[in-house]
Image (cartoon, rainbow, N blue to C red; front, side, top):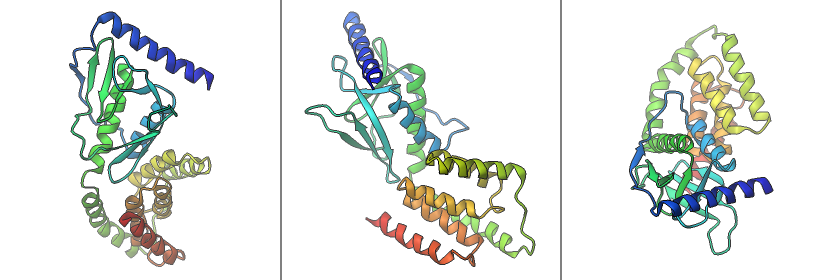
Length: 267
């Protein structure tokens, strides 16, 4: 804990001194525009920005000559609201909610004298240029994934229906491949360790590899999404599970979960 505080204080002093020496706050020139990397997933993007905050690779500030403040956690909701939680500081809020869907800023990384920043409505994020590039990409990816989320999920279910229909018609169901088994075992291991975002990522890889051979992946994904309060995604995954195995022993409880999550979405 002392080491983390020391790192934050040293970084704050570093930014303050260098900005003071330059006599300016930087040109504000855009040095990087966010892009979507081919390996990105929603869960990995959320995990990346959370890890960057918790490891103090990024910090918040409100100006060139103001102390930096540690970000303790970042919570992403499906309605586009991102909650930034901060270490306690007298006279300052413990958390700030920001909508990615109505954001006027472009999530670019800008030159800021001797440092770099991403400008948000109520504060700025500062850190190394490579780290800020990654954070900008993650925030942009999350923003794009959440735009018209309901429409995207409806389309996903429509496309999944013929796949599920074909699966139900098979007298002999396909076997689980060794590669698929690997993703499932690893996902279950992460779930047991309460590494829910990692587990979501691995289950998503499993159903991308084979969307029908292990229907329980959708059930487990739904429960994992519930852990993150991503109720709309939980509903979609549970509906896919019931499309594949409508006569499953837990079909009643699965449908009841959908009703529960529909209520949570409407709240």
